[in-house]
Length: 412
Image (cartoon, rainbow, N blue to C red; front, side, top):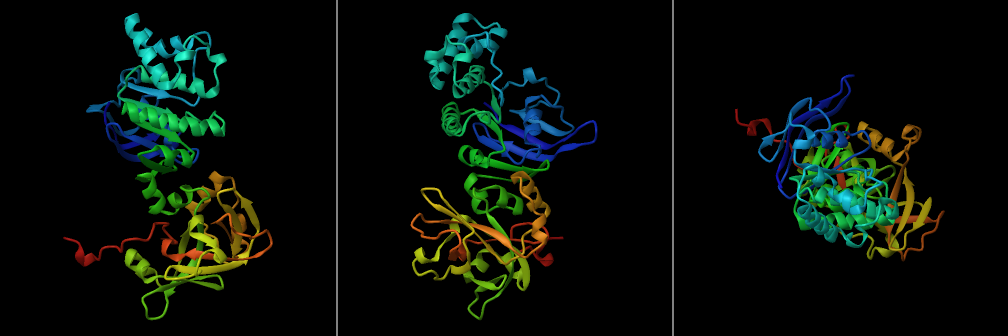
């Protein structure tokens, strides 16, 4: 096991295409780090540079204390698990798992012991003499993982290993991978485009966009305190609602108000204390983020107000009963947020943002209690927990938290 460090790592292909730019990451010994982002964001390229399957154009990669930029893949002491199982169909499970050890000319009794130990960890003992064609998709992926485990590498590198499995198997295998990594304590870098996988598996999650690292943090921190619009919109399902609104003071009590189209949301004074950067945006448009779970049917929200409460009125356009909750889609008369970040999010989701320019209307999704009686076409009053709103600079997309240091505070 070893720490893996990427220092200013970049990748430029021969045609001039840049896949990764100035990537700095330090994955601690035994840590499970997930690289996540849309297709083409550079996450797989970054993983392949660590593995030695892609040349490094700039920067350094260290595994343990060794710089491995020019070390061949076979000598880096890492094991890779791919999206495709890459099993030998004519070999048994036992021989597939032990294949790499056989190439290294280990004694047969050592190979047998290592293979049987890995099979026990993975629940494959009874399948050791079967061929891959007689296994399910989940079992085949476990065989591929077994082949990595027996090598006892310094690091596991996993490239979308669950993408070929159906939804139920993906959930099961997520739990299996988390358990195995925890039991073995092997440094692991895991690539996925699925943010649910990223959030449930990673000790930390690194979000990438167009080859650039956006934020790296524990999953809950990414969710509660995204660094920018892209991270905010990418992490969470359903995604965070984003809309433009004007921010201003609300009377003399220190509170704020948001003008959302023709409606007003009161924002408690403590939000300004928590986010001093908002002071520079009073009287200006900002991007407001609202998580679906921070909105509820006002009829079920108790008093429907309080210090951190406000309401939006609309009509239910779509109601999706999910069992544990109900997703209610509605619209407000507020300008959509159209930036490079939101365009990238729309491309990843396969949606079109061109309509955003035609009318000042933003579609929102709220996560209501299953006790709601709202139906499609009904008027709906949505209670918003305004103490949990997110705010972003409309020009830069940066989250608004700390106020910038004054020039006089800086040492010369």
